[in-house]
Image (cartoon, rainbow, N blue to C red; front, side):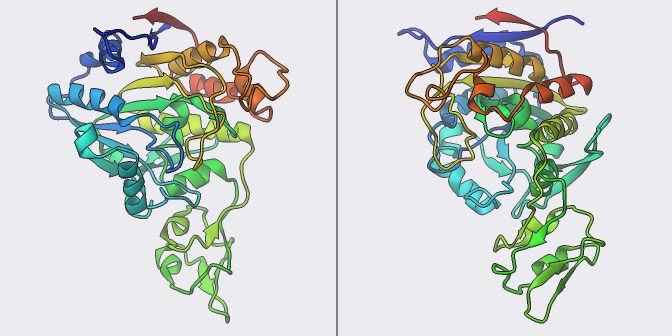
Length: 369
């Protein structure tokens, strides 16, 4: 197999070239203009950042891509799916408030934000996963599934469950509906925290399998003999009373992320951009971000999300660890910064599974712009 091309530019600037101009030049050199955007709906998948976290990507970067797509007569929108965990992005109203608070509004970016899985995270498309070992049908946010073209903009950083979060994490986990996220994160079926249940009945109305009933204390129960584990009740509950406590092992989680990525990208033109900047030890889903563990590296772009992740992790691992950081305070057992940061993780599992699924190539040619 021929090596995939990954394009890279550093963060050095001068009076004639800003970072935003460098991004524009990078993606054009990488071939984004070869995509036919004319009259196409273009989903730009991005993490808007949990409020309180300041490591997320600046909205200025997204405007570069939005303007380019609009110049080609495309119809771009910024998008993400609701979160499974309790935070400020678990439903579309709070999620859009968070996005606007962090600068992702039409005035700053030039396009609208659409939360792909709808108000409560239940608007989803069921997409078969060809070759899936753990996931046969992925639950993908409907607006992402409906889009004609898919662009991912990824903040490359550490992650406590997957080792690092890059293109595949942003695609696979990020594009899953709330039920899809439950399927990736968890191996069992949801349960009710009866201390939070208020007897509203919304979960029972949503359940298509008659698995939910109420006891004499007006508290919901889920019959696991009838429950199919779809997770739609989690999205339906406004009071966060339904949860799943049976979390998948990290290796299985990584493989499920690869399989969800397969579902998202299947049959679509796609392009991917990663920013190795503010490389915090944990995900941008945290309402805080710890200090960066390595110096900023630069911006990368490719049509191949697997090669892109490989190029980013290789470039990151060449950097000297910042001493006064979470990683700098830990003992360095390997030359891999992300395994050293989270020793219970193995990011290569996701990469290798993605290659097996035909999502891309681990071998790449790095072209510096």
